[in-house]
Image 1 (tube, rainbow, N blue to C red):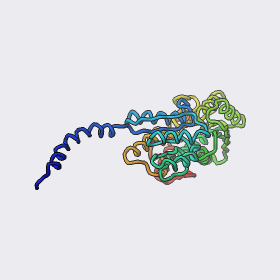
Image 2 (image 1 turned 120 degrees about the vertical axis):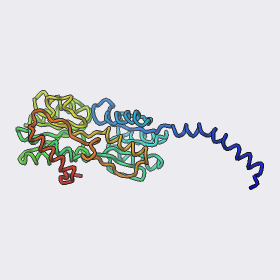
Image 3 (image 1 turned 45 degrees about the horizontal axis):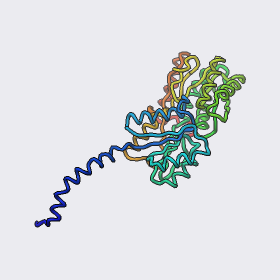
Image 4 (image 1 turned 180 degrees about the vertical axis):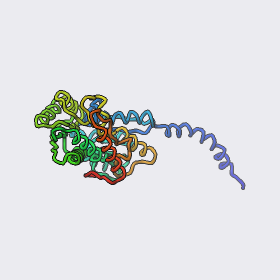
Length: 325
């Protein structure tokens, strides 16, 4: 085939053009995946917000992502914080808590090319995913242990605010407690504050004065106050998010480990590999990197520990389904 001089020169130039283009292409390919997160609490709260910050720190080390965060965000600032990250080109914007759901719904509609995730969220959309745990499942196990170990037949649940995480956890905890102690009673208190240590302690002392001898505080920094009260009054408690017996060896019977780090690393990997869909990503005891129980206190009889492990097996097999799902 006869080739014109123009076509020949263009063809001959292609290798050079390709070579010149390679550095730019590689630079684009090497650009880190950008993630931003809006946090309701402090990155040093030893709870919910710190767990998310730790997850992104681990994702940076493991996957090479770039991340930014804003902590202690109040409700009036939700929309602007999320919008600012979307405007600045973050591909994945995480809202760390169900309290951000309304703001995400508003912002996502304006930024269709940004993916949003609401941890503990309720509503999905075209570019909005939610991620949470089967809260009532491990909560049932915590209630069962509490019921077996309570001498008074009274346990106490302390939460900051009522939403899916806390209400599902309370329901599971109460069901498990009644499974172990049909004549027992679970007290519930709401502090209205995730961080105030004094309020956490006050709520715990109030329950203890009513005969509660096993406490389950589910706040963030305020949990420390409740556990201090339990230690001072020599009653037992249940841990949350991590194996709390390591920090409170005298009082923690067992821990509901909702591993935010494991959950987030899992869905960040999905985002990197194929992108997140606009659906709920739920984690339960069949995903132990995200949901599991902790260590038993030495005071828990081996027979009770075996009963709990049997309940875990039934849950994993789908034979026992605590409500709500």
